[in-house]
Length: 313
Image (tube, rainbow, N blue to C red; front, side, top):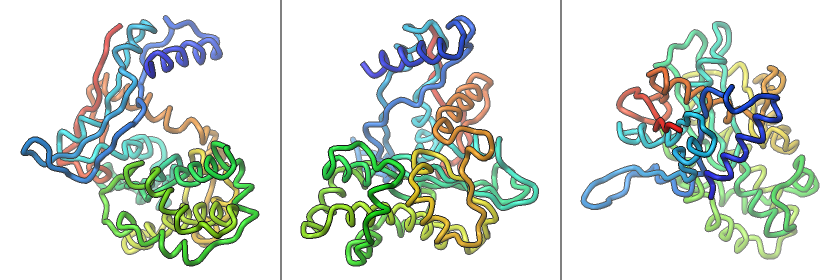
């Protein structure tokens, strides 16, 4: 069903662009992640990482008539990586600088950051998931207000930070784990949200939203202090993803990174919301061209490797 919906989306966006399906050379599909286990676990006598995305690329290829590349993450896992983050190659190709130490921060459900030292080569690039992006706030908004997200951060801007709750949340083991690392709903999904609700039963709901939103910005900054700042001092931070529209998050980032130039991705004439989609189109092209798509400094893989499954129509 997911692949059918993806196929319909391809047809709609192609029509909107004024193109026919025959004019589209290639589709790159991320898929929908339903399980991501970056910490090695024992299965069938083996110790392995694991990940699963639904939305079969073969179905997309058959329904659209377009060559489709998908299942990108498992190739990285096969050579010892965690399968995430995969955005760093795109960041390196498009945004490395000869003058600035630059970081690319994407705030989706999970927040991830790519570090591009000035004059870097691919081997200098490193990246990791900093922790929750919008995932926790979205879950709390659904619980308290029956809304899917906090539009523009308006609820967070009305509340206040709950210090005891914030101090408890920031003690999560993930924030202390050294990169390379990645995370997902297994760490910051429904179980984590239920724990927040148990600890904040008597608190105002807007204060809980504010505190959870603050956690996103604070965990990003603490990741910078612990794992980046000791070796690289950032000059510029470029922010994309849904979190860029949350005014509270952006204000908090500017509060923490007070001497770093923080800019939204849109200021570079790129869509903040479309960055990941563009990234996977680039990754699909790299796969078809026979080029590696992972960055070992981001995923912990033993080597660079070609990613993805190529599916013919």
